[in-house]
Image 1 (tube, rainbow over the protein chains, first blue to last red):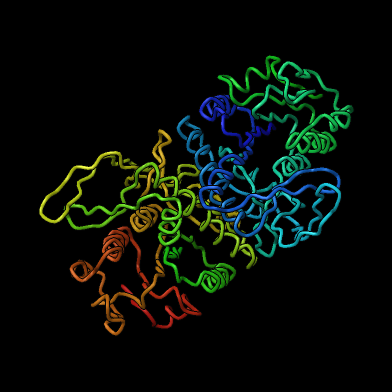
Image 2 (image 1 turned 180 degrees about the vertical axis):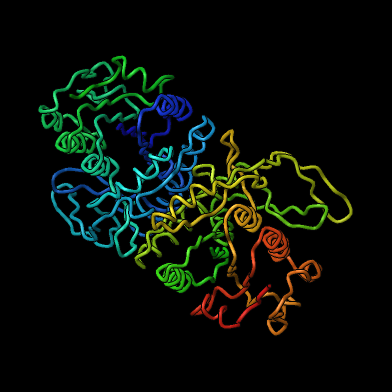
Length: 267
Length: 267
């Protein structure tokens, strides 16, 4: 089984990506699409006057602070706009795609972390009212049920608690949680860079081959969201994933070019 | 099988409605929830500066003109905000609800009507660029697949063409299309009025019992969205539905009070 992760950047080539996803699916590859919508979220938040506030955990991981207003924007953009856009593109390619969030059928059951630490320069502050959490249980049955009947699941955050609280969650961690309970061997992650860059500002610094045991060594070089991708990848290998591709989602053949050696391969 | 239609008005009591839906489901009633989001759509459209333009068909039916901008708002509010809100409320009640749009798995396959007539006072104009259409095929297999495994489908517009065009569609007509291919015997429709009012401005004018064969007689009295409900009901009876309840979704026990005789019953 393969998971294809489509980032939420502005310039991702969704038509090209979905054409290649459809081809893999029609060749019999069992796969799940997981996607982000970060750029769309920030754009709609700005239009609605909702502030997107970043917080930094004591270990240096940056995330968006998910208050109630932002969660509304989150649902509008992840669950609404982008999920249905990708699903419809796949339908147009003849694939019976079904768009879901982690809420649906308790697909991604989360434990809410209402209180967070935010590290700002020299001091660390306690922040409350956070609607985000960690995926603690994946409904693998629902995914298999759909896939066995020929439906391709297109999944995105948010997740949900058993009490019905909708909570933001990190897609890369959720992907690792899915790898734990599903026979996922390969993850393809598409974003707005040619792969893992030793220097994020220099596209020439692409690292093509990465040993999975050396992933922790990448953490000091990884900036922003890339840190989460590295942490998610470490977890995914623990849960039995054999190979992860990181590459450019803006090009004409985003997936097949990765299989032909563009981008980074972690094994 | 029962369809419960939750209107998109501002004052619908979603917590109370979902508590009663959950109880019916847990008692073994097979059911589908279909919902609107009209009030939320108009509010978000106003916040984003998107104009909601009403057009009137030559036969006097009012609809929203669905251009590209409005379709984005449509996805944000129907597929995003409200669909996941209702789904999460049901999850909180212990129901494995799965929120879907007509796009997902080609659930509501539509034929797009790109060109419309708009009747304004004395003249009728041709309007192009409409992203709306009529549901021509329902994926009953997907609904049964989910329901057989204990998942309650929570469905909303939009629909989709086989080419992957996302199109707005009327929920009441889509409900009739579902009744055609599924063994639906009962429809419960909840909105912001005590039932069918002979005079829309007078809550005392509630008609409690309506003969299904007399539905066309209600058309001249029906205003705005109520016209569509009457037309949808006529179709639903043609397709084998036995009983339709129309009633108030703002009260404490919206569904059980209808079963006890509040509201309008059409048989």
